[in-house]
Image 1: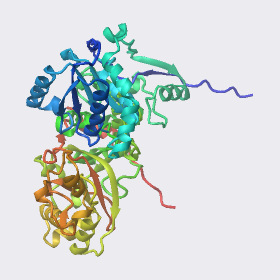
Image 2: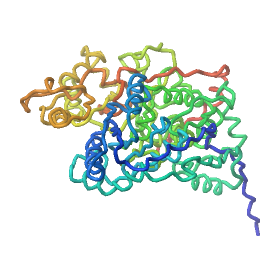
Image 3: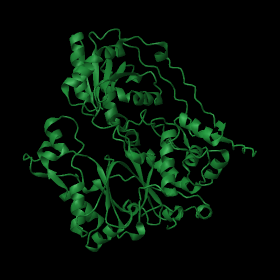
Image 4: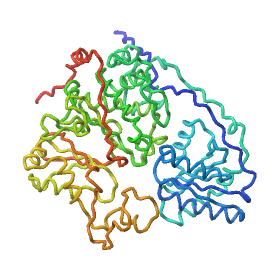
Amino acid sequence: MPQPEAQSMYEVLSPWAETDPVPLKGISERLKSLEGMTIGLHADNKPAAVPILKVVKKRLQERYPTVKFTHFQTKLIDEIDRYPEVRERFVEWAKGVDAVVGAVGD
Amino acid sequence: MEELGKPVCVIVNKGFVPDAKSAASGKGMPSARIISSPVIPNCTIEEEIDAGITSVIEDIIAGLTKPLTDEERTPSPKKADNARIIFNGTLKEVNRFFYKRGWTDGLPVVPPTEEEVAEMLSGTDLPPDHVVAKLVPRNANMTVERIAINAVMAGALPTYMPVLIAAVEILMEPYVYFGQFGVSAGAFAPMWFLNGPIRHDLHVNCKAGILSPGDIANSGIGRALSLIIKNIAGIRKGVEDMGVMGNVGKIGMVVGENEEESPWDPLHVDHGFERDDSCITVHFMDNSQVITPYHTDDNGILRVLCDNIPPGRQLVYTIMFNAETARILSTRGWSKKDVREYICEYARVPAYQHRVWERVFTEASPNPWGLRRQQMPIDPYETVRKIPNPDWLRILVAGGPLSSMGIYGGDHFDVQKWCTKKIQLPANWNKLVAKYKNVQHNYAFY
């Protein structure tokens, strides 16, 4: 009887690239309540983002009548990262809010 | 926003949750609070939006008020599997292992052994640990060695390394918007154009069946780049890649321009390079069609193009003329610029059929065409351009004989910035080319 040939073995390298350690950041402490707070509504550039945030505003207002809202919309993809002046405006806007609800419209 | 000390929650469609998590994690914030919403992407139905958001309003409130867990406050690092040698087994076992890790395109790969990778590395003068790029979303170190490993898996030859490195450099250019097109729901696939002498060195197909498989250079370069995008940039189908319908081109599309039979300057010369430079250009393509002229004269060629460019899109179009069609246009006095301007002017539809018609008059959302109300006709039957300006059209010559032409629609940002790079060749290029020059197929007639 012919013996089956031993199969070749392959010691292989990983195609999955290494990442540099990214400093991990925790998220910010949450609010105790939304009552009386200013909520920033941040819409991206996709069509559904603004209508989504309109509903968020409506529902939160029903629940928390004293809550206030302020809006920021980015008109282009990656606008905040790409354009320093937009980032500056965004940071200024963010300073005036207590929390943010973001909506991605797609 | 979280870095500014503000609690944030972000509403995304449920299908985008894995993508959003990967993006947050890649930026070092794995605990970002993401609200999974049932609202369909780009929804325009108010009742659906109302019902969908109302159904998750408790999650939104909790996203902003529910106290943090220890893990959210201080995320623990994930254990990275950075082993260089990852597995030892038979051909079948290696393939099963890689497939189960999600590292393939579904087809068998060549095992990337030390020996194979060393041979692949002979295709570049760069050291193996040189980091060529860090591509979003994963921002991993795209070293020369990792590029070589994925190239081996794809069945590429070492002579393709300079092309792969230049291609990766292109993806790093901010105006290419790889971070958007690479993961888009529109399933854009990179379509790579090669120009210059390297086409001959590598036996890149420039003619018949240009987008069909069967040529090792076209297929090997395209597949290697596809694996690089998956395994190094970290864009996996259904996780980070949100392509709804997907795109068969994602397995790899490489086109060599048929410069020798073109009556016009080749693409890379249009983009400011010398004819003798070897260059690569990218176009992110999400739709294609092949059409035949109404007649073989210039009128029949240009009319069919004008009629078949879709009105309802907002894309840049690459038009691929076969050499014969290009010759006819040229002999009848048409330059590439003339062709682009003609199509831009005469590819028209009644205003009511144009995508922008609805947007201009019914929505406040940004209009990427930059058209304003006063630029759209009041009369819905008055015609408007399908292509806003000639820069939205690219022209090159490729493909086989006969008269068909290809229209490929795709990327649409920063259209005036061309994404072409010169390919840097290693010092021993001629020797290397000679070594692999005989790797080419010859079909026998039957």
